[in-house]
Image (cartoon, rainbow, N blue to C red; front, side, top):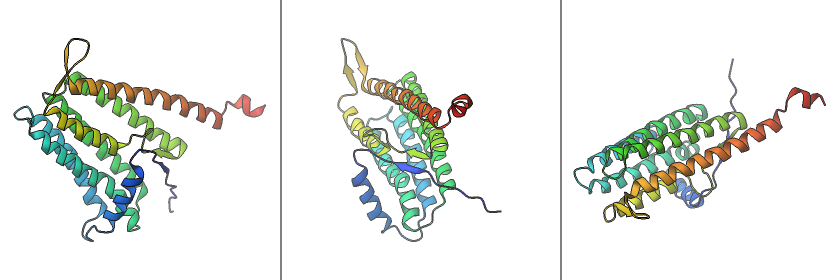
Length: 228
């Protein structure tokens, strides 16, 4: 018996989505035949894990932040191009691709943020808060994909691509201004940025939870309402 599977719709509204889509299509047409989507997925994971290692090595020299930026660029290439290449070559494996891609993203995020927490630029409590907020938002997104059939790649103008870009710019700023003064005390720049990011992700999580719950309630009202 053949199982049927309907792929979910992808919702992408980020600031750079149009430009990124054209760039990825151009790159997919030029990827050597011996390179497939699995290779790119592996590249995305290894580069994100290595970015975390380089963050931790920045304890010894801030110039490891340049290596972090190289890893972030390679992560964008692997993580963004794997699906585009599969669609370009018509080698789609929607269930396998969705599962593996997001398991890899989750594992890579753990290495990345842990490395940031082990660096001199972000404290471990803030790194833990960022990681928890990211996981909560990811879980909400995956559950919504299952029950509503739409996978949100972006939230507002931000997607992983814009976040990578901000992180790369932030790493360059760290070389000059690793701390910032707010209302008196001097704080780590990434502690401030990480706290803002965690609060923003929790706010998006709360809003998405309310919106999705209301929509599901309308789609599946209580039995008494259906009878009436």
